[in-house]
Amino acid sequence: MQLLDRVKQTEFLGREFLLWLWFRTETDRGIFDLREQGKAEVWFDGKIILQSESDRGVDTITCAGEAAYMREARVALSEDKEITRAAVKLALGEDEFSFVLDSTWMNFSTFKAPRVMQDREADPEGLFYEKIFLIEKAVSAMDEIFAVFIELRTGSDWGDTEGPALMKWVSEGG
Image 1 (cartoon, rainbow, N blue to C red):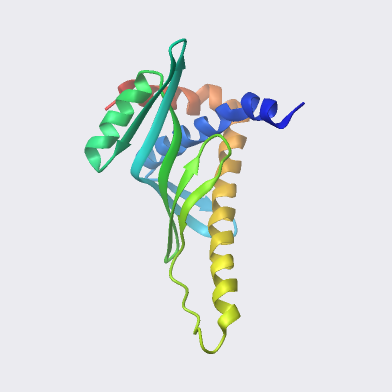
Image 2 (image 1 turned 90 degrees about the horizontal axis):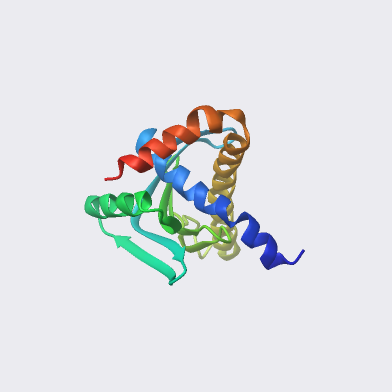
């Protein structure tokens, strides 16, 4: 099977993950208990892109801004649009990261990590390694959150509690 065929078959998982993540940020304050990294807080920040496909083509809505955009994006969800990209913030302890997460390839873009505190003069390579460490820290946290989602999505709790609660949240719109 070709790579693009596999992506087409599983692209719904990324969209469902972003939807579930948004749902959790609004219903559980976006707090996740990660094994090794402790507590992580996730929230959507500033921009969401939603799409739907029909026989006329792809319809895309970009919602940006503060509270009002969330209501508009929630209404778009209730009209069968799916999240394809979202600006996300992640807090791990005192470190705060921001990035855009793409649902198809689960790519991070416009990634911003906390400021590196190494002394450029004393250890010029240290700047690079500390920045890489911070990036890996955020990616690892998102991997753990995605693993929680996959475990829920494939378990009985999805059909019994999580899925219906998510669908209720979507149907309530803005």
